[in-house]
Structures are given as structure tokens and as C-alpha cells.
Amino acid sequence: MGNHNNWVVYMEYYELYVTRIRELCKERGFTINKLATMSNVKQSTLDNIVRGLTKNPRVKTLHKIALAFNMTLTEFLDFEALNEFSFEDDTDE
Image (cartoon, rainbow, N blue to C red; front, side, top):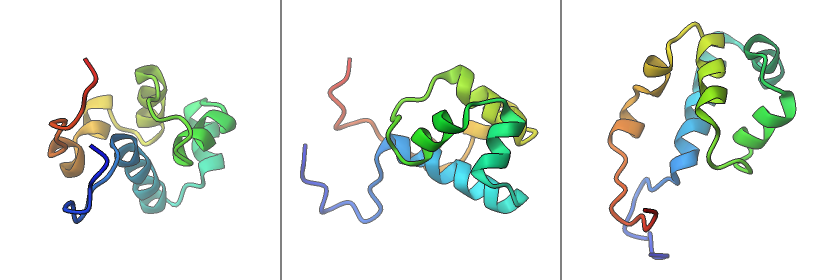
């Protein structure tokens, strides 16, 4: 807990979503604004997710985002960093 110096590429769980959203936007030439419009997710909600203020977005929100990228939720969540994430130090029940 607290000491993550030995993690070279340690990321918080929520940052994985943020990185995924940013990469897909870049790939498709979407702005966050365009993504908000296409996903029918409020711009403020998306901004909060991308800024890391919302650390645990609802599945419904992630599903809408995935659809905007023309992906299923499964495809959206199927990426290496998320698949390899370890919850070992997590104390959540």
C-alpha cells in the first residue's frame, strides 16, 4: 500500500479506461466532445472520467462509449493492460 516505486508502469485501475478512451479517440479522430455526442453520454460525465474525477464509471456509461466506437462492451474492455491488471494490493471486498 502506498509504495508503488517498484512498479515501472503502475497505473490506477481507472487510468486504464482513460487511456483506452483517449487511444480510441485518437485512432478515430474523435474529440471528447464528439464522443459525448455520439455516445449520448453527457460531456461533463465524459470529462470527469477522462480527468480521473470519476474513478468508477457505470457499466451503462462504458457500454454507451463502446457503442460510439462501434464496439461491443466486451471488445472495448478487451485490451492487454486491463487483462493484465492485478488487484493483489486492493483491499476492496
